[in-house]
Image 1 (tube, rainbow, N blue to C red):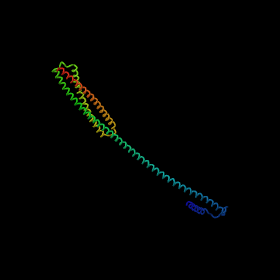
Image 2: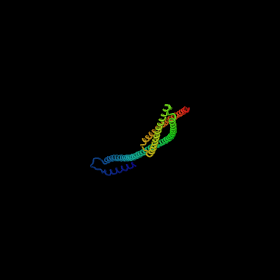
Image 3: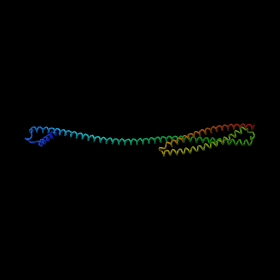
Length: 279
């Protein structure tokens, strides 16, 4: 197609240039007509070659411009696609970060729930141990009351015997034992009262601990770690107090056993004294 256009243009140029430049033979000129025509024809041929080459160059330039425009459009489209992908990636990263934050919060809540369940379980154990300790304390109080009654009876008997028969006959050893028995009885009463006070304090502390557990359910936030640590310290303190109370109760029970043995010995001594008096 381009060659046909070139041929048509060449023909047009030849015809126009020939018509414009043609002149009849002038006798005044020194050159003949045929020589002038050949020279003009050569010039026309040179001009036609330069004109065709310009057309080819223009066609190539147009094609290159079209290719460049297409490349620019493609680059702009690709740049838009890259920007769109970057924005989508940023949105996805934000969504992932939000999901990770939510999962972290859920994990913390699960940890707090487990801690609260463990504390409730330990609280149940402490309450159970407290009930057992109260039962043991009641039994000990019953024993103490029984022993006090027995001692009171023995004291009455001894006092009567002292005033009636054996006031000047009782040995100093028996008198010392009786005095020591009375003093230990007073100490035992005082220890029992102290233990009752400690048990009451322990009950109050357990009530406060229950309230603290309820507060932990209501206020489960980022500051619960310190609160849970404080509760654990309170639980440890209660356990230590229970151990101390158990040791005290064991020591008290040992004292009661010794006191009971001494009472038996006193009874034997009194029986032997009675036999001596009767004889």
